[in-house]
Image (tube, rainbow, N blue to C red; front, top):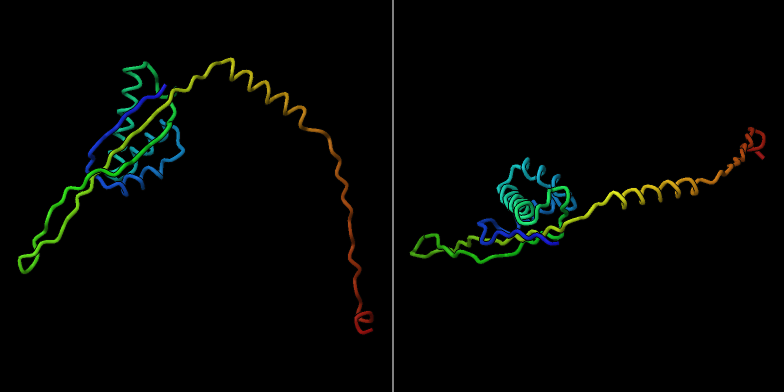
Length: 154
């Protein structure tokens, strides 16, 4: 099952959002949420809103908790630009682009049953017992012959 949360026309540039998204890449949902809440960036606050929205969608619509969810994808897409002008000398104007972005977060539900966990644990135990054969290591000591002054002179 896939849960989607999106935020469109966010007044933050894509570059700033991607910088924050790369810092939380590979984290699970609760760790990512904690990390974003401590980052001192406006883009982190905006991504945290999308994560909270996705968690609310999952709990309200499907009755899933945060530990049953895993991040499937986090897309940060470019939105339209607001084009403004800044007045400069001789009646001219320089363009100002106010960038926007779209964020799409997809979560997938992960079913964890006790049977699967128990069977995996049993497999690891049997493999661990079989994988440890007793091997005796023999170490040969090599002694370097000391050279004397007479041997060096020859």
